[in-house]
Image 1 (spheres, rainbow, N blue to C red):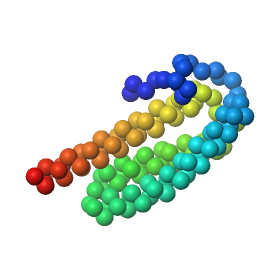
Image 2: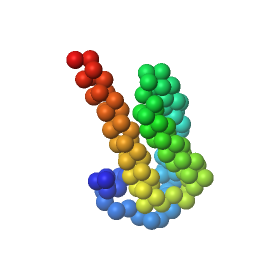
Image 3: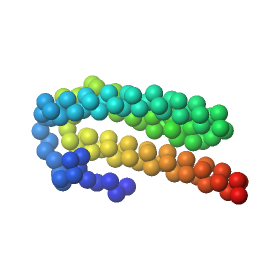
Image 4: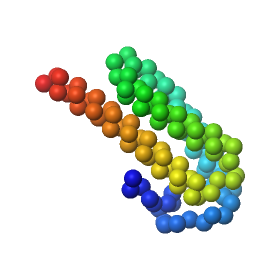
Length: 115
Protein backbone atom coordinates (compact mmCIF):
# COMPACT_ATOMS: atom_id res chain seq x y z
CA UNK A 1 0.00 0.00 0.00
CA UNK A 2 1.03 3.61 -0.44
CA UNK A 3 0.58 4.77 3.16
CA UNK A 4 4.23 5.41 3.93
CA UNK A 5 4.04 8.69 5.80
CA UNK A 6 4.99 9.15 9.40
CA UNK A 7 2.34 9.56 12.04
CA UNK A 8 3.11 13.25 12.38
CA UNK A 9 3.33 13.75 8.61
CA UNK A 10 6.89 15.06 8.80
CA UNK A 11 9.02 12.20 7.48
CA UNK A 12 11.05 9.67 9.45
CA UNK A 13 10.79 9.84 13.19
CA UNK A 14 13.14 9.15 16.07
CA UNK A 15 13.58 5.70 17.59
CA UNK A 16 13.82 7.16 21.08
CA UNK A 17 11.55 6.18 23.93
CA UNK A 18 8.20 8.02 23.63
CA UNK A 19 7.74 11.17 25.66
CA UNK A 20 5.14 11.49 28.41
CA UNK A 21 2.87 13.38 25.99
CA UNK A 22 3.16 10.59 23.45
CA UNK A 23 2.30 8.02 26.13
CA UNK A 24 -0.78 10.03 27.06
CA UNK A 25 -1.78 10.27 23.40
CA UNK A 26 -1.43 6.52 22.99
CA UNK A 27 -3.59 5.96 26.07
CA UNK A 28 -6.22 8.33 24.70
CA UNK A 29 -6.25 6.54 21.34
CA UNK A 30 -6.58 3.16 23.05
CA UNK A 31 -9.70 4.44 24.83
CA UNK A 32 -11.18 5.67 21.58
CA UNK A 33 -10.47 2.33 19.91
CA UNK A 34 -12.22 0.49 22.74
CA UNK A 35 -15.33 2.64 22.24
CA UNK A 36 -15.23 2.01 18.50
CA UNK A 37 -15.09 -1.74 19.03
CA UNK A 38 -18.54 -1.60 20.62
CA UNK A 39 -19.87 -0.05 17.42
CA UNK A 40 -18.17 -2.73 15.35
CA UNK A 41 -19.97 -5.44 17.30
CA UNK A 42 -23.35 -3.77 16.62
CA UNK A 43 -22.47 -3.41 12.94
CA UNK A 44 -21.53 -7.08 12.70
CA UNK A 45 -24.97 -8.04 13.94
CA UNK A 46 -26.67 -5.76 11.43
CA UNK A 47 -24.64 -7.17 8.55
CA UNK A 48 -25.60 -10.71 9.55
CA UNK A 49 -29.27 -9.74 9.81
CA UNK A 50 -29.10 -8.32 6.30
CA UNK A 51 -27.46 -11.50 4.96
CA UNK A 52 -23.96 -10.12 4.41
CA UNK A 53 -21.91 -12.84 6.08
CA UNK A 54 -18.80 -12.20 3.95
CA UNK A 55 -18.81 -8.50 4.85
CA UNK A 56 -19.42 -9.35 8.50
CA UNK A 57 -16.33 -11.57 8.39
CA UNK A 58 -14.23 -8.70 6.98
CA UNK A 59 -15.54 -6.44 9.72
CA UNK A 60 -14.68 -9.07 12.33
CA UNK A 61 -11.14 -9.37 10.91
CA UNK A 62 -10.73 -5.60 11.02
CA UNK A 63 -12.03 -5.49 14.59
CA UNK A 64 -9.63 -8.27 15.58
CA UNK A 65 -6.74 -6.30 14.09
CA UNK A 66 -7.72 -3.19 16.03
CA UNK A 67 -8.08 -5.28 19.20
CA UNK A 68 -4.66 -6.80 18.61
CA UNK A 69 -3.21 -3.31 18.34
CA UNK A 70 -5.02 -2.32 21.53
CA UNK A 71 -3.55 -5.30 23.42
CA UNK A 72 -0.07 -4.60 22.05
CA UNK A 73 -0.15 -0.91 22.88
CA UNK A 74 -1.52 -1.62 26.35
CA UNK A 75 1.37 -3.93 27.19
CA UNK A 76 4.05 -1.81 25.55
CA UNK A 77 2.65 1.66 25.99
CA UNK A 78 5.89 3.24 27.21
CA UNK A 79 8.10 1.13 24.95
CA UNK A 80 6.43 1.65 21.58
CA UNK A 81 8.68 3.16 18.95
CA UNK A 82 7.49 5.33 16.10
CA UNK A 83 8.40 2.65 13.54
CA UNK A 84 6.16 0.19 15.37
CA UNK A 85 3.32 2.68 15.33
CA UNK A 86 3.93 3.20 11.60
CA UNK A 87 3.71 -0.56 11.02
CA UNK A 88 0.47 -0.79 12.98
CA UNK A 89 -0.94 2.16 11.06
CA UNK A 90 -0.20 0.40 7.77
CA UNK A 91 -1.82 -2.84 8.98
CA UNK A 92 -4.92 -1.00 10.13
CA UNK A 93 -5.20 1.00 6.90
CA UNK A 94 -4.84 -2.18 4.83
CA UNK A 95 -7.50 -3.90 6.94
CA UNK A 96 -9.83 -0.94 6.57
CA UNK A 97 -9.30 -0.91 2.81
CA UNK A 98 -10.20 -4.62 2.58
CA UNK A 99 -13.31 -4.04 4.69
CA UNK A 100 -14.52 -1.13 2.59
CA UNK A 101 -13.82 -3.00 -0.66
CA UNK A 102 -16.02 -5.83 0.59
CA UNK A 103 -18.77 -3.46 1.71
CA UNK A 104 -18.59 -1.64 -1.63
CA UNK A 105 -18.96 -4.95 -3.46
CA UNK A 106 -22.10 -5.79 -1.48
CA UNK A 107 -23.51 -2.28 -1.88
CA UNK A 108 -22.87 -2.30 -5.64
CA UNK A 109 -24.55 -5.70 -6.04
CA UNK A 110 -27.54 -4.49 -4.01
CA UNK A 111 -27.80 -1.31 -6.09
CA UNK A 112 -27.94 -3.30 -9.31
CA UNK A 113 -30.72 -5.51 -7.94
CA UNK A 114 -32.83 -2.46 -7.14
CA UNK A 115 -32.68 -0.97 -10.66
